[in-house]
Image (cartoon, rainbow, N blue to C red; front, side, top):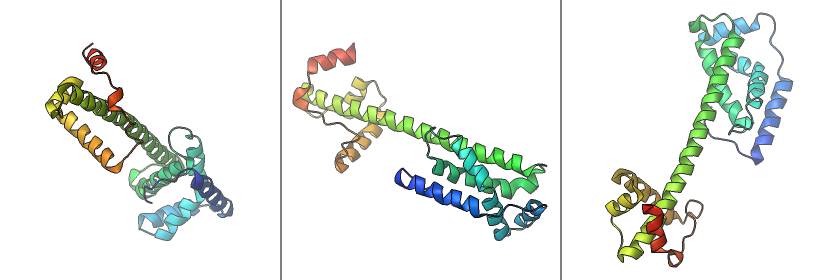
Length: 204
């Protein structure tokens, strides 16, 4: 499965379809799981599809237990399905005795990793937006104080950043300006800035 996320409007529809699949999928018969796993170990795709379908309810249950943690339930089902595929493909080699317990562990690990990655991405984005805003403000204020465009090293010194960090954020700001991305950088009026207050705030 791909990693494309499902958001807001489509999420409820996706979950309705998945729950309908659960309701219409015949349950496993006695001994069927073992036969499916044996065929899956030989690469049988139809057996994979059957085992995935009969365990979709478990994946949904685990996804719903992790709702409100940064990803939609349908996104978590997607991630959990990837974990379930890994469980199917590695169970025989794992020598584990209980497939369901093994699969639940793989599904949970995949979901938790995705949640952690999403949280880290959000934190990184928030930090980058803050850094870009600081860069923009500092660049404008230094330009007023110096009466010329500030050099990269001057901006870095004022912000107490490394030159490498300053250069990277400058690239982000330049790209945001190119795209007129008002969500990344709030509009700043240079005429409303006070150079003396700026010096006090940065040096203080």
